[in-house]
Length: 261
Image 1 (tube, one colour):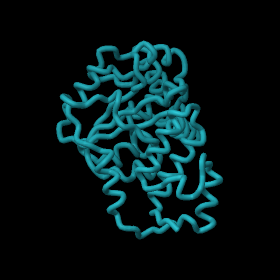
Image 2 (cartoon, one colour; image 1 turned 180 degrees about the horizontal axis):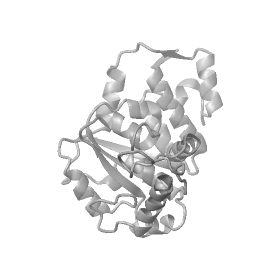
Image 3 (cartoon, one colour; image 1 turned 90 degrees about the vertical axis):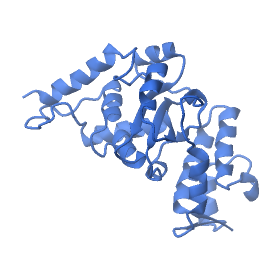
């Protein structure tokens, strides 16, 4: 019997889904390696190619035990391994370690730093944004920072609509969603539009299925400007020499809809 904390179980579950849905042997190898870093090996359970059903059976049969009070050392060591210090002299975001996006991963990021969002291989943005991304020669679509709040709090805003997230508003606009008409009436801030709850759920699902994230500990938040200027991520407006007029137009359409009386 193997013991895992609830947090590790959820991260493993996400990796199993990634492995199960992988389109190439290389993607499966990557998912397998991530499982092994969490001390989970298929061979320990005589499984060659694991599925979500296999994983659930391991838990229900008792071969894997889920415990809530496991020592945090395993989680801490994983975080230390994954989240290295960032420096413009050594950082290469194109080859950084990217992780699946889910609540348990995000809620473990109790520190300050930078984050980078990348479109998964074989996933596509709506037209014309996919064409613009192809011209960038990389899959990175956004670079941001968590300076006055932890990455956990910042990314809950940006990826899970818990507050006012710049990226969430941008990706929602790119995907063609609109806020409720007149929803900004009487609001002091006439820019922070919100999508309706049902659309928020659809946007969150799209983010989890189509994007992956890399995070970095740093105390030098000027790195964000440098990286945006260098990489020109598709959905960054500020500091971006190739900021898209089409993105501004999509967000303006959302603002106009929310402001209309």
